[in-house]
Image (cartoon, rainbow, N blue to C red; front, side, top):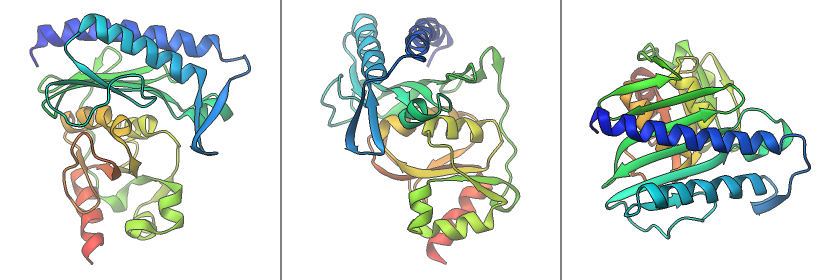
Length: 259
């Protein structure tokens, strides 16, 4: 992406995210309209839906030929990654938002023909906006980020999905044991930021496109690896177990799958 193009989109998307943050905070001390989707641990609120409606409206106006894939289904019925595709998670970590009022994020990204072009990941309560574009780098608010240290799994913390560890999917218990310690945050977006900042060496969970599309662009731009646990590269429309890690940690995790 050309820098001038990115700067134009960055100004627009940052304004959209500020609007979404304000909407979240307006509802902060009010009763929430909470519904279950696939089960009692998969929640949606009126805030998720309102934010997605606003993002969809903004994108329709600013990029009318693009398609939109949103977690709450208010965009398009996307079956392939051809052309311009915006991927939205209007409130990532809804359970955290409902129960903790902390550790939740807003994520938007732009892909063209399946290749990530630009991404915005907002840690709402941390007041941190991670943003960047392919070939241009990544910023945390106004400061350009440097690549995190390429630490091995044995020298860092590992953010892992609780259910995957409980059921020992893909040798998660061995991965946890090989690390310096396991952490669970309950938000893909927030977990990605920990790896981007070098606070953790990996994050592994069952993820859908809106969970990892944004983080994937930012992570790869910082020299991190986003793959399946057996080392394959997920497409942007993939569903399944995905990891983001330092190169050394990813190598160790992949090796455990065939040991």
